[in-house]
Image (tube, rainbow, N blue to C red; front, side):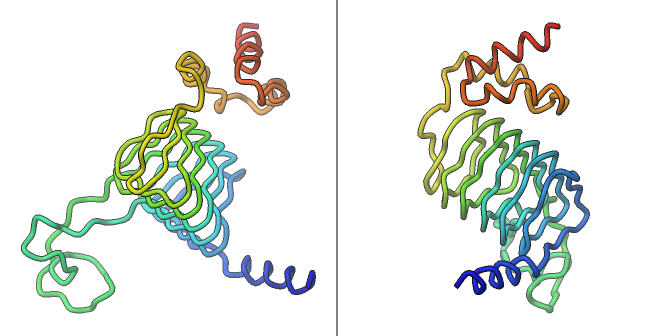
Length: 206
C-alpha cells in the first residue's frame, strides 16, 4: 500500500505545471497540473494542484489550495451574442464570423499572507486584502478586506481574524517585507499577534 501511495504521488507530480508570461519567485511553488498565465507570485507563496490562475498578482506568504480558479476572461454580455465566434482570439470553437476586440482582462490582486481554501472561484478584477482567509468552495465576486474570513456562494464575511487595532498594526508593519534574517528573529512569537507586534516594533526601532 505504501509503494502504491508513493507511485501515485510520483505520477501526480510528473504532469508538471503550465506557466506562461508569468513571474514566479524562486522561493515559491506551483504544483503540477496547475496553469498560470500572465501572473506574478511573490516570495514564499504556493498554489496547489490543478489550479488555473490567469491575470493575477499574488503577494508573499500566500497559501492557495488545490482546484482554485482565479481570474480568466469574460464573455461580452452587452453584445447580441456571448459566443466566441464573434470576438478575436483562439477559443474552443474554430469558426469566426467576426473578430471584435473584447474588453481587456481585469487583474485579480491578492495581498500578502492570504489563505485560499480548496475549490475557490475568484472573479476577475477582485482585490483580496492582506491576511484574508477564504473558505473552501467559496465563490468570490467582490473585494475582500484585510484580515477577514469569507466563505459561501457568493462569499460573505464571517468575521474579522483579529481586533481592529491588531489588523491596523499588522497592515502598517508589513512583516512580509522583512529581511529573512529579521523574520527569523520575530518568528518565535508568530503564535501570539500582540507579542509579535511588540517584538517587531522593537526590532524596527533599533
